Length: 114
Image 1 (cartoon, rainbow, N blue to C red):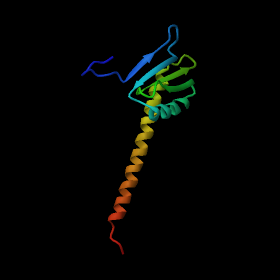
Image 2: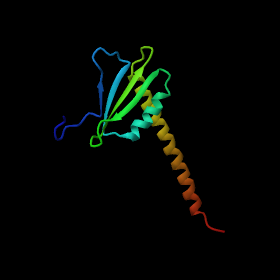
Image 3: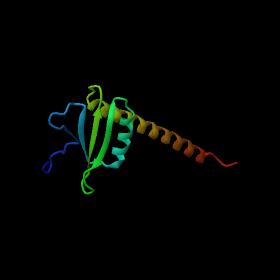
Image 4: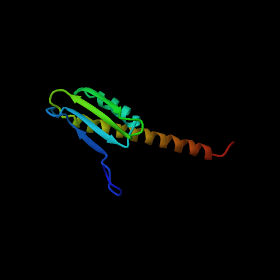
């Protein structure tokens, strides 16, 4: 446990004894369903992933256990990293589109009425 002034880890890896690197549980701190569900969706699109799911450990805790199982010897960290990058790209696209439409709306509001 991090003491006062110490920085808590954002991500921990938990691997069962004897399990290969294709079966990993990632513990994401200070996260909830917002990231868990959207990241699960992105990762499940990967053909190398057999299983991907997450659980919230307890309502009073702000962490999720995020499990990935892959096939073909693919390390679970690869689809995890890819899913995070793809989710970031989707969020950036949504933000850019929203900002552009918002700016267009503001410009139309500034035009003089005829």
